[in-house]
Length: 285
Image 1: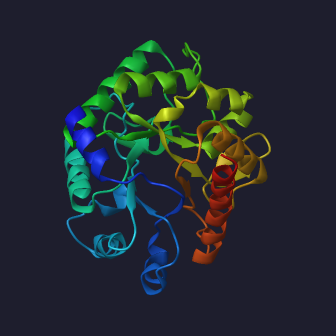
Image 2: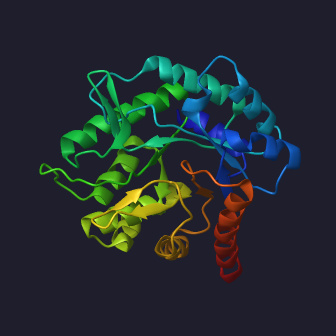
């Protein structure tokens, strides 16, 4: 796999700047106006069909913008067998659209073939570490390239935990030889819910493997924060993002907005905030 990775990286420029999540309600606006956006991230699971309008629009948009693929269907931490049909369809999408990055989540989402329609956190144990590392390796071998693994937000912990989430995540990335999608909003949400210092989390990550950052909105439910992807990025997350960029460097950053989807101009304003922080870092460097 290393030769494939070297070949791909030598011909593909690194992703940079602020991007936006590609949503169907904005297809026409994007194609009619060709807005000044660095890149778009497509939700892999929306494009798994053999045809139809989603693929038609993605084809057109990919002619003008770099594309990344972000999925929720690998269920890497599950005890269910890996879905080889899903992986094959993902490989076909990669071959067709040549995305700059391909990502999924550090989680499990199915048991005994039943999908929970959520991203459940892993137990942070040696046994779970070995299990998910092996499955990530299998996926990467099947695809012929590295994938990015994203940290999820969480609301519960396991009594069986043997290490912190950030230690577990860092070991997964190291042992699986994969890359990392650092969701700063998820770190903040989990830090508030479980009362840990988000900066300790950020410092412990392998910074050289962070190829993308996600930002999104949450809701304050009183007893906990809920990661909804349905609002603007909140001030404490912007602050944590600035600290992350100071620590890691100017990593390509995505604004995620999946519910209560606003106008495209609202998304652009959020992306401009991220772009300004990235530019300020470059100016100070």
